[in-house]
Every structure is written in C-alpha cells, then in structure tokens.
Length: 268
Image (cartoon, rainbow, N blue to C red; front, side, top):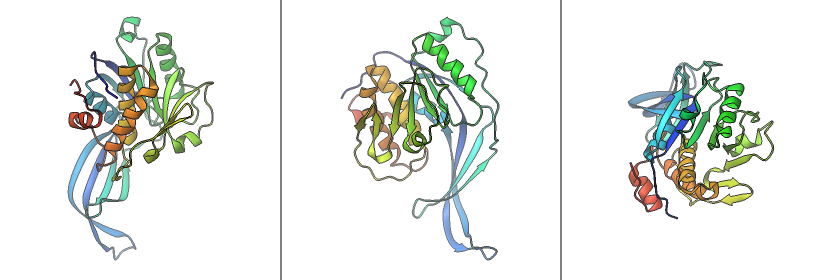
C-alpha cells in the first residue's frame, strides 16, 4: 500500500502532557536499611510524553500541528537497569488529582475550517473534562471535521461523532458510550480491531511499549487524511507502532522509519 501526501495537513491537538525522564544505571546490591535494590545511576534522558509525543509524531509525517496542552507538567521518572533494559521503578513527580481545565473559547468558523482533523489525547488528568470534550467534539462534528480520540475516560458519551482509539484493557472498562461508536481497539502485538475485523501486525521483539499508543494514533490520523478511510489507515498505524516498541522509551518516528515501513518518500 502506498501513501502519498498530496497536501500539507493542519491538525488541532488537545491533551495532557508530561516529561518522561529515564534514569539509566544498574542494581547490584540490596539496601542494608530495607529489602530493596540500590540503584546506581550512570545517565539520564528526558523526552516529551502524552500529547506532546503525539505532536512530535504527527510532525514526523509533515503535519502542521496547533497544540493546546496543560500548563501543569507531570514528570514520570523511570529507572532502567541498563544491563537488561529492565524497567525497575517509576516515580511520578508533580501529579495532581485534577489539573486546570482547558478553555476552548468560541472559535470562529474560519478558524475551525483551517483544520483537516482534530486529535484529542486525553489521559483524564482534568485538562479535558467531560463538558469540554462534548463541546469540542460537537463543534467540529457540526463542521464535518474528523475527530480522533485516545482517552482513559470510562464514560465516552462526551465524544460525539469521533473515532476512538482505545486499548484492549480500557475497552473492557468502558461504562457508557454513544450509539454506533467507531472504536479502533489496539491489541498490542496482535494488531487492532475495527468494526469486527482484525488487522494483524508482523511480530517484533518488544523492548518498551511506552508511547506506542501515541505513535499508533498519529499514524492513524495521517493514514486517514491520505486515504480517507479508517480501514486503509490501520495497517499503517500497526506498522508504525511496531517500530516504536523496538526502542526503549517514548519514540518519535524518523523519515527513515516511515520510508522503510511504507516504501514512500514522506514530505517533511
């Protein structure tokens, strides 16, 4: 399947953001104070996560992104034993029970029509609350602009006329949804399901699944904008997510990744 970017796409992205901080080192002894490992750090790396990772991957496809995100940034510290690429501990810094809510204001039709798609990356941290999501999706549905959602909410009735990308575990925890939902259910190494059809993916050696959902979402949006069909976009999203999991930590696709997987020249 060949995807060709015929135009420059504009996407509105709304969602929570974080910084993923990776601490690389080794655990070689147990603390004398308690039966816990002692971590000796050798290096540290910081990457953007959540909706910011979605933004970077959308931009990898040459998409122009207007990004609305929370001012409060959580830092997720992950401690990795670099000898085995083993994730041994995570510490979240600065996380609040309910963050500041997004104010979408009243955008004019001229501004709305500049977007080819809207992406909602909702980690349910308070920035995108129920009424905000309902107003946002209703507004863009009225103007026939496709909306793609990745959410951790259990009540999905606030997402009007939206394509909802959701993983298998979150799908099983849904409490409410609107009639005739468009679910793209990701199954990890088993691919994804859409409208009863399973889209398989080639097996890969998995190093880290962190951020793979963000890569899948970005590729799904780009594939849809190119082909105007969800069914045509899912195989591409599967391939891109499969590349992501072969890397440690949140990953941003490169033009080489995209060319290698899809055999086309991406416009960047």
